[in-house]
Length: 141
Length: 141
Length: 141
Length: 141
Image: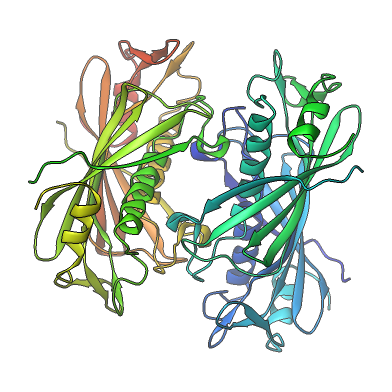
């Protein structure tokens, strides 16, 4: 694993992201992680939608540990880092902060894949993608 | 951990649960797990919304491993089981099936908690809840 | 406009469909209407996903009038009817009920269309679709 | 109705807002309108969440006319204006633009209300709210 400050993505909680408990619904943290991932790709001059002919990036695993709730209109920051990389998968780690407080932390592992009739077949990640993502995240190689 | 067949919850994929990759968005599996959890509570004659004065059930952790995609109008079944229980937390495990194929598997750990100004304070789970959930899931105690 | 009892679709409010006001978020009524529309198609032996080569059903207009809120775990029924039909569009009307109370009512107008680079081009609706939908909704022709 | 340039709110389409047709799901336009409404409130130094003791802002009607689709990572702008105001309701109008193209237009009518056991009771809008919203939207009174 390489170190670095990570890429920072900031936005505000929307009304429709809250639930009857008055806090952000736990499923939305997975959407927040994806938003930060895609913002990192854009910062690297990339997009998951056109990364190559027929390539997609299905999730292999996603996990999140919840520490504190987020409330409507809270401004929060997600720090994304590239963690373990294999020939066919990228693991991202995420920390969500509101000012100096940790809201929670999670990770997502994504495969590089081509579509098959009922599934996806993992293939090798094009060579330039990980270096560009790491550079955008401020991580040494 | 006690064994048993688990509680089964079945429904169909909605159009708005798919994304531009043509499959169910990965974040929705966390909503599916919660739906199955709440269906288990109802089968036990309980509801997370009125389990006791001021009690809530915030998530401590949620995780999911993805094996195969789900498509629009697929009928799928979620099998829920009660796994590790502590004085203040319940861990559920989930397996998602489409006919005889495993779509994926995950878990959620939930705390019994009372609301505090900026957070939740974990408290002991009322004594009757876990036995009733386990009975509804067909699990021996 | 033809008359008839309409097609009925019933389900229960999910936790993640509520917001911090403790009621179903207003945007979800548009998802409920679509669920009922697609259930009507399935009842007619059809699906919006494979209705013909390259055909899609983009929305032209959607509207809803809100009368009473829905709460977590409320069971509600949506009554769908086919209203105005033109060569290229279908207008559905919807009434949402909880027991004997009207929660609200709305409509959606959908075009039959083929995808163009940056938009959709409306085309004629295949001849068998509207009669089958009306039959499934119990409406005379 | 007063005239003016309106308040502008800009953001980018998220991956989870698309559906299998490859475009933004039609229900999300209602969330976009709400986001723009709440951004206008914040620009006016207000929030719908703490506008007064026990006050809420339930929807009376919401409608949208769709002209062109939005795609993943499209940047779009919502122009919000205050339209018809009564003692107890505010009607907002919205136009969604991507560069010089109109994506669609809609409106929402919202009541000022206090919570009752199974419904909301409309009450008079506090006197300072509409003038502040109109000022933030650049509208003459």
